Amino acid sequence: MGNIFRGNTPAAPDSEQLFPKATPGTLPAEAPPGWTLPPKLLASGTRRLGNFALLAGLVVAGNGLLELLVTLPSSHSADPVRIWAFAGTAALSFGVFAISRRSGIGAARLLDLGLVYEVLCAFLFGVAYHAGPSPPEGPLYGWSPIAVWLVVFPLIVPSARGKTLLAATTAALMDPLGLALNAVRGQPVPATLVVAQMLLPTAIAAVAGVAGARIVYRLSATAGLARELGSYRLVSPLGHGGMGQVWRAEHRMLARAAAIKLIRTVDGDEPHSREMLTRFEREARATALLRSPHTIQVYDFGVTDEGSFYYVMELLDGFALDDLVRQFGPQPQERVVHLLRQVCHSLEEAHRSGLVHRDVKPGNIFLCRYGLDLDFVKVLDFGLVKPAAGDAGPELTAQGYVTGTPSYMAPECALGHHDIDGRADLYALGCVGYYLLTGSTPFPSGGRTAMEVLFDQVHTQPRRPSALSGRALDRGLEDILMSCLAKRREERPESALELAARLSSLGLAERWTPESADRFWLEAASRDQRAVSTAVLPRVPS
Image (cartoon, rainbow, N blue to C red; front, side, top):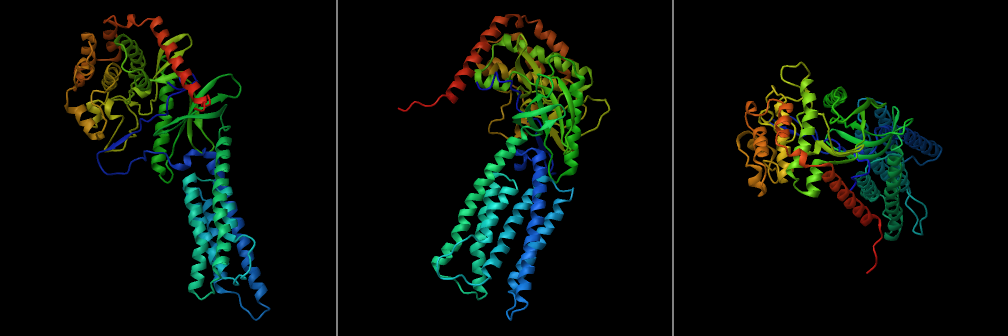
């Protein structure tokens, strides 16, 4: 089962899925590589890049000036190629320092610019180094400036492993390129053995620099876990998704664990980042207003020093309904009714408050142990919540886009209608019940595009759950689910309260007893323990 009883919270929301009807750019599906470092460490990396570039510029400029002063009294003039290479390196370094002090460039993008700076400086170093006096034919000792650069730069400027490797490899190739360019301009080419002795330290330095950078990178990421947000200290990441990350956290003064959700902004896209922050703040405020025990509790929210939004919520002990079906298969119908009624409790309060969830799905419904209660449901991720039809509120969805998850999207949402009300959530909840009973959504998305699934949501009548699962189901339960899946919202239950009453009238929920839940959770705990044992026990040699 895996991490059922580890104070786990669900994966961070993946609800920010955009399915364009037109061609405007959409939010990237994957987080930028720089996100793996906490924002504070990203900011620290940019400061180190700027300071290091300033220091490198001063050293190179001083070295070039010294070479000019040394050659002035003699009859030999300084090699103009070397002087221009020194000047170019100094100018490039001072330029990077100036850019690093600007506020309009994202930290991750600036660090990517630093890798370009690494390669360009390596090229200029190679040109200047090989434009100097020809080396003797005997053994060579010492490292070239490029070799030193390849070791030092990755230790100062953090970056993702793949980018560090690419930049180091490209920078190392600047050494033979510099030799070749000077050979073209008439410089004598050393013997093959001498060339090999010149280039071998560069290759060693590239490997050492990448390895050292990886160690520093991991240490920086680990140090970031000790970051504090308000009264909370981040402990370890729990998951990530389209809008952000979720971290396990601890209160500094109280003996209470919590989960902290951090927004992921988009570097270089300030309007979109502001929209994301607004939506994130709205989610926190909307969730904090709800008091249903079946809605996840929000403790606090705020803005970090770097301008990222976060909110603190209760840390749940359990797993999402999609994990339940993946691990244990379709569920008994009496348990399905028991779970759906609890979701109705959360949705009814939200709808009475004038809010529509708009992304009800198994991944956003958490099954947990809550104190002494087993099979206790929590509804999560109000990230797409918006005022119901007729209520005032900002429209944060770009024109021409629909938001949500196609397999659980009501027809009116798929068509992009603006007059959405709580019956859209009831349609999605019908899809959830269908999935719990059969292990499949009414219109599976496997191997099909989002638009094909949305077309079925609007035009195709789903099969009854019993016809898909091949097992006998209570006809009344099937009728209720099929009414939730009606294409016209007027044919669905009027409210979550009415839906809960109709589910209660079946008398199925009472058949899922505390003893039934206890047996399930004991089995889940046993599975989880076996999985942990398999992971930590050493293999016995055969």
